[in-house]
Image: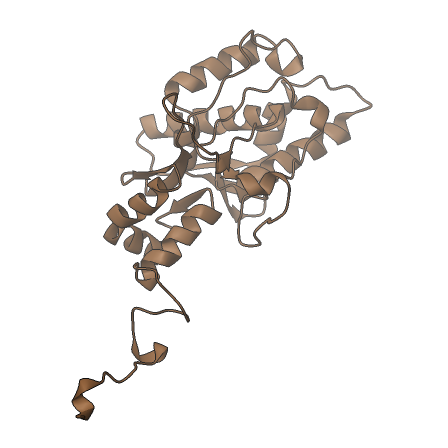
Length: 263
């Protein structure tokens, strides 16, 4: 029998479609990496990850399809250079939940409102970047808190913890010690309409316990989103910059906080 009747086996190293033994996947390596990062992280920023962003745009349709198989929607904002995922919810069919929502603490809400207001103001003035000092953030937040001589230090510590969380979640880029640049992510989390609702909430004394009648002020964004598995802490994912699950401020200040629905 002629040897030409047989096909010589091709080793994995010589077959570009196989990335590991038994690989049946159809995406190339760049698309797979972006898909994993979208699942692990709450967002993808073009300025921080230009190569991954390029791969996302090149493979957007197939990546969207893979996420849709998991009942997860992909949102890509080309103008802001942001991409994030959103849990699909439906009244028509039962949808298993892969992602969870995470509420911001009251202090974090105050800081987000301040950041969004500053960002909106500077954008209206034609500025391309908005910067803020930690001291200004702290002083503004203190005006909304019940502070006396016995708890100033504790309140300041809570505010600094809240600032740290907003840094890890990508709302602030620290350019130097105590000096931050506000990122476009804050626009996604707080629309102009939501900003107005929260300003009203704060002015009505919401931070001091006089909360709005409707506490389900769900944000329209990504920042509070995490994989559902992270709720139990079973897989915190070392590279996930969101610091999932850890709340830098006291738990007793979170009950009446408007929630940020995470996409």
